[in-house]
Length: 258
Image (cartoon, rainbow, N blue to C red):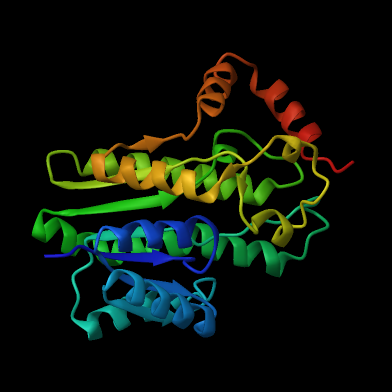
């Protein structure tokens, strides 16, 4: 029987690549994103190419009622979710005191609240079946403070901590939680986050496909934390030996625009 994966933020970047990977393994999909036209286009492409079933749920998960609506739609479909992939998220550049609160609130609602809500909604069924995998997409940004990108970095820190804690709670079951923490990745994220010209982005980004492959593989293995790329792993090791105040200064400098 094919595994059913629910993927949020599935119309571009890492989310789209994860959908392609799962489809290539003959797994059925439930794709969630805001734009119905893109979702239906991807649905048609994947069904035609791989001969699978793709269901779409157009929904803005930054809406506080969005996760509830997604869960209710899935229940109407009478489908059991085998893999829950919380990928949807966005960022925003600038001084916290200057940024519109409505934008940062929406960021928290999407990056944090939607991830927690969907996990809470689908996890009990996985525990009951004693089978299931959850993949949460965080970032290397979650390991450090991020001046000029403070809310985004903080939301990803939450996702890492939350994922690790839930993974521990599930020890002894066949349900696993994995958090994927990529560095800069070639998606539309940076343009949407007004990050053109930011110093830290001079580094050549990884491809969305390679990051998705790493995350999907780690999810299947039940690995708790996945950090794609040897450079990122070395960077994290280096950060553990640096004073927090110095890390914050360096992070702030790297987030400035030239």
